Length: 377
Image: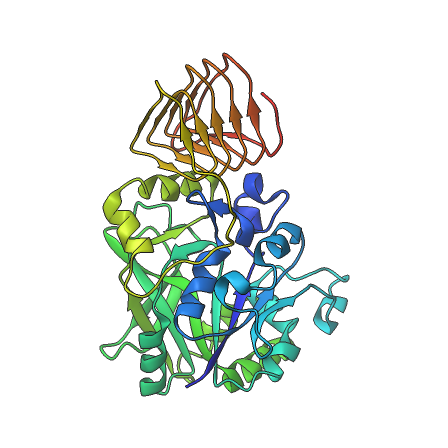
């Protein structure tokens, strides 16, 4: 079985307006050196999917800068590789005052030309708000073995985690794993099986389903394609048991990042057998730890200068922590400057933020203190 990929870069932007004001969900920085799109893209590349369309909407300049020609993912190819699918007004949009898409199904309506020209048997669909490292090869094998039209990748998540919200889809299956119902999360307790928003869809079925949805004026992929066709179509689920997190708020972004300070959680995400997470390479000098500094329980990228104290934090490339500064439970993005004798707790800084000497900023893990890109405090 052959497969091509489609990644939705924008459809969840409204969930984290603080981080998507100048970028797409796909290009949100994560874990010191990565972007959220790296996880979906790496899962596809590691599984032999070498033709990937990136569906964009707006604010995608930083995404284009990050992806380049795809060479860091071995996707700079004459055949296949990365295909940027920029936004355009479709016939469907013309009936709704020319607006751009807002849902997964509407986005698919706008890239039917890409789908029509794919010779591959299967299309792998993935959102960018999920952080996981899925081996898609056994999923493809199960998809082919069951003769499925759609295979939904699912994950078991404790009900109290940020990965679950009112938009999480909870599937119900029979003993063979075939879908018999699907509904939004409604306050279930214990461990809940939810859709990861990674799907394998038979290409000819996807084409027919999208065209049918257009003719009926439908907008929701899960409700109008998956749920409506659960009896006629062959829809199955496949369970994923690795690291899983969903970014649906600033608090969930903070929580997912802090989980990586646990060694076992890092292993579950980054050190799965033969499944590296690729990202854009940036050559920087090693981090310099000035005598007298103290760093514990933290992830520190290259190019940093540490003169103060850093505890349980994630520092991206090029961060400078001044003398006498104390940084605890913080996420400092690229080229942030923390002044001397500054104290930070539960703080997220965007790129190029400057915190002057002597400042004291404190948030909470459920409501982190956020400093916007390029802002000086």
